[in-house]
Image 1 (spheres, rainbow, N blue to C red):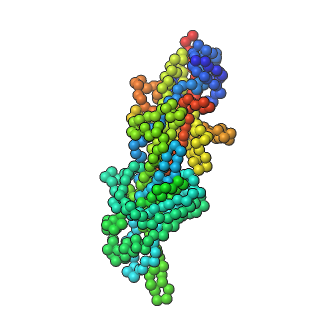
Image 2 (cartoon, rainbow, N blue to C red):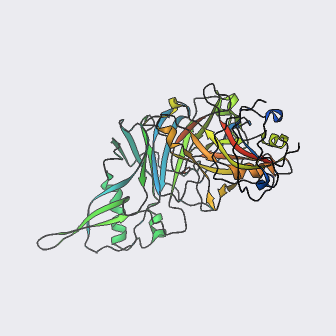
Image 3 (cartoon, rainbow, N blue to C red):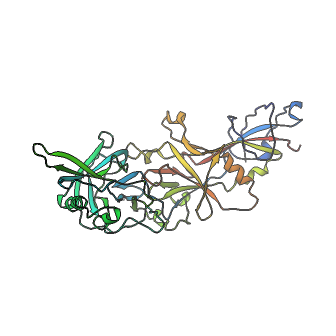
Length: 454
């Protein structure tokens, strides 16, 4: 394999062990492939223990990019109420609905209190995805089952029975950037028995409340093609508010009682169900978490979507060819470069500026998060390239490559990448695979060689 090399003289090189990762050296070297017969040697001199030292940069190790899909991801205990639906060109109909249990902090009302009205307040948390210029529907339904599970966990695939007839349907134009909250007036007939039950001491705690009111689910319209909106689950900003008055001789006293998500309880009080119905028969093959879809079989693309469980899986099947280079060596840096095709993102479908990195085993079960120097490793957008409208993620994975090189037995593990907030958003990222015409996923490796056999 042919190589183009720029050599750098090193003084005071330290602590030599075969394939130990370190950082801090930036060398502009371009390598097309590895052919050890064409790698020249730089004489450094006696200050380097009579060693020949040369630094090369290699970028032609195979990067195997594929797509996998988690069977389910945890969405309970979230601080976001996620609701909406849009049609995605890759993932089909993407739908998010939320299930909430709400209750008052205190079960105490004056005995002469009279209910005036009741409404649902949803505070925007500024998250949105897809087109907010189109109207959306919010269907409020009553739950027919308790929001409980045996393990106190709900997933994006979990189901809770609810009344098929909505309590109320709100048509609205989302304004997550400009408005603080959305108000939905609820039927008086819904609020009256709850209000009177608390006032008359028939409802005194959450268990008694559940006998009358188990909670609500917020569902998008079946035919909506607009956006998915995030509302906060914070009890001070999202709640069912009962407006009531206490009659007085001259002027009535007006007050409110709020039902909110009580996050201090051990049981889950909220989860988001996030689904997609595919148009693409290729992605439809991912029916099990253990299945990997190589990018070479999916138009040289790898697919990521939060909420529905798609992630990109990365392996380096030829990395141990580094052993073919004669002499002792040390990895100075290793960077994975991934690029989303420009046609796959826009203002309505934005790209996040970072990616989370997790290690998985051969069955795509998460084993750990990737750390370096005590800090989690993230993929970040190269800001300098972004200024030229070239968006490329760069992931420093020297610590991972070093582990792979020192693995004595064959282990079919890998790492996956996906956006932050994977369980409470619907962000998508489409990545180029390893056989692109204009760009291919690549591993750029800076490698120092010393004590080479002559």
